[in-house]
Length: 267
Ligand SMILES: [Zn+2]
Ligand SMILES: [Zn+2]
Image 1 (tube, rainbow, N blue to C red):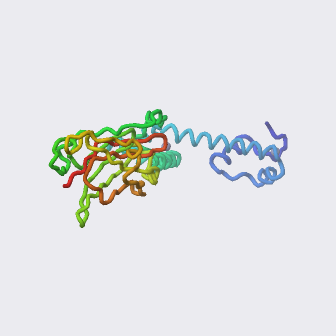
Image 2 (image 1 turned 180 degrees about the vertical axis):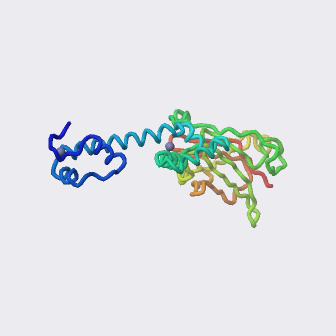
Image 3 (image 1 turned 135 degrees about the horizontal axis):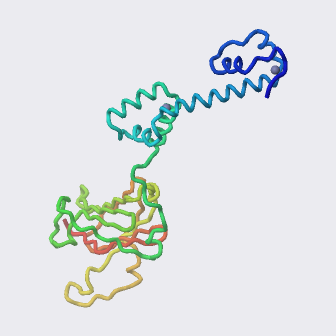
């Protein structure tokens, strides 16, 4: 690629102009203005220059792992200072550090395991398991005693955590409060909002007060005693629950969650 014009700048002149910004001779400048071949030669030299500059920078650059560790504050003070100094003179690394920082800002340090169909879905009805009583929890003792009498209670089913609390309203009625939360960070409380919760009365035993066998009416048993839905904060409230034995049914999307053996005493 050589220009045969006598006014054309030679190789050396073009290089100096491209690399060191040395001005061309007026005659060469005029030639360049109307010689596409020489303009092409100059462009190539400039391109080579950019390539060399970036490679020169890169030869002194910390490797990507170090830059990542730098952004995550995982380097020693000495290494951190070295990179800080390098960033002042290297626009390439400075840009890279900005990108890494932006990425880290969105980064979830403990990513949730990939969501696959919950095992809950294959069952029509699942039983919530009562999480063993923890001594540090505040406990309301009722006359009945035993595990059944301990409040508040913590239940666990799938990714759902449910805590049930008993409280007494100003007029002496028992209030059953349920707090729903998810252990899955992908599920928000909003997903629970509107889920219908039913409170069923359960006859405490098949034996009546006088030792007589009580007739069970299966149809009547299926009628919920009280019904409400989860609010936007993941709460459910059953007001004025009379003492008795109950079971809660949570109507989830694919299944019903059942919490058994709820005995609400007289406090
Ligand atoms: Zn030329
Ligand atoms: Zn660099």
